[in-house]
Image 1 (cartoon, rainbow, N blue to C red):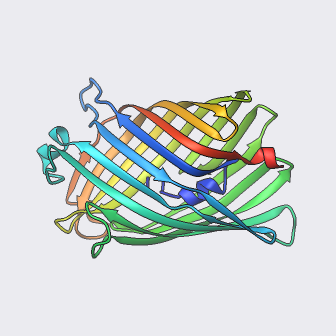
Image 2 (tube, rainbow, N blue to C red):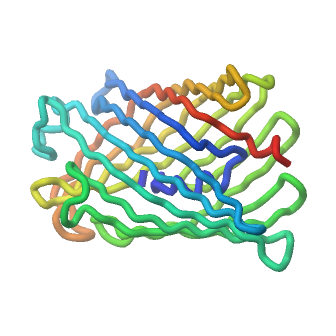
Length: 284
């Protein structure tokens, strides 16, 4: 996945806030090096909608994404068709998650199922994928949870299975660690009531159906620093500069068989986002 494995529903189940509305834009720069980075943009818009059912929570997390790549560096190897000097793919995903307590109050279970359409064009034949994830949470003490689970998705390049290890760990009033590796993990520090900041790691892996019938697999690993600004209680603006490494383009027709391979190139990026955010620790 994105591995961000596009486990966005699981992100919402393993972080100290929920974003009923969020829009995020990433711009990646070229880098002056031997294998210079391919510039790209990534637009993401989605929502986390929690619904309380007795002692459990149902979470709806639909999102849309659109990748656009600089064709001057990508097309020289014939990986993608030209679209007005840019190449791009997009996805529409509908994850549905459920978090429920178990008999032992220290344990809880979260499960997530999702269906998505990924490709140059959406809703066409062979653009659909089905996947899911689940993890167990153990509450060592108040505000300190450990998590263990697995992710599985029917990607176009084959069945993608990955173990998950994470935490939702409040160190003190100002420091929070949360996320599920290898998808995403964050250290968040509270500078003031209206300013938060920290460091985030994301591993992205996903696949998209191309019009020629082949698939494109994208891999990226992003390490970034971020600043969250809250001009009001529930409005959050984020600025997030970072660097991507071990980026790869791969294409093919058959599962587990790649016909072309290209190093995407390591390089810097800037991410900006806006969200309507509900911080869960304020509800405790």
